[in-house]
Image: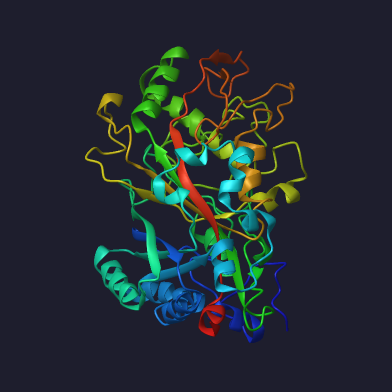
Length: 464
């Protein structure tokens, strides 16, 4: 029976072609792999035959999606540690160098540099040096601790010929709050709302969190998997398009913006925290602003909510980051089922070391202004309809979503790129009062470079 891409997959009961798919799929695609310590290597190929041999050798260091899921299940029962993660991706240029048929997504074929104008990114000449160069492949080496990553790095280096050069390198370092939830450098819980492709994960969301009555996180496999065209059997060998972007965060500037917004709206005492929540859409602990006016939601972080009770944006502004990038059926431009198709599997990791507590009550001047940020990573089945759509048509579009009064909400204050205009905020949560316009929120996130990759099947790598 063919792999059914139109629905979620129960990995525990998968048989036949679905089981084969899991045995040949890379980890981290259908379910996030732990990578609190992450090394990212960008590679260039000088000799196609040696590159093929190298990639073939890497397949022996990699595990399958099924092995990863079994490790996760074993950890739940015994707390046993798993094996480190090695992910391999190729650019369109890398495929051409190898002389292999590449996946046909037009955005992938063109590459990230070609999307600069479309996405309002900085000019390529402003990117960090290694991103300006031609990149053929990416390797992701991740684990919960640094030791296994170093060991894996040595194993990779033992296989790498001189003709495969390391063009650039990044290091990820996970951040967590007091509850153990992953956070980004502005201090907010990150990655909570994800499309779930495994039936077991949907069941766990229903049974162990706040439920799935208002927001169903399930997503069909076709939203993340793509037949691997150069693999021995594309009917069972799948991969996924992988976006990588380095986003530097000016924490000092963002915290100044939170402080200034609270002052402009006359927020007092603990209600001052709502200023930052109006920019992000959640409080730092992950409490959705549309659900309550103060932090303190139960743990784990709640995600079963919609914007049905906030149609006028009197609780969560229309332009808040999480409302812009996941409107939950409230965008007004498409039917909810079409809107959901733009969501992608985000696998980002923070980078940079800092000496302050991101959640501490400190003045902005004590926050870092550079050298920290997010290594944004996401898996897609259609780059144009998922990642690029989200950035261009949602985050960078001042007219989205469509409020009932016909006004323009403005750019996403966190990741929106482009000219910023004053935006309106409700001084009182949930009240039908006149929203006040404030000065534009300064752009505190800068894209430093990136690329598009395809994460092929293990079968493809072994066939080289």
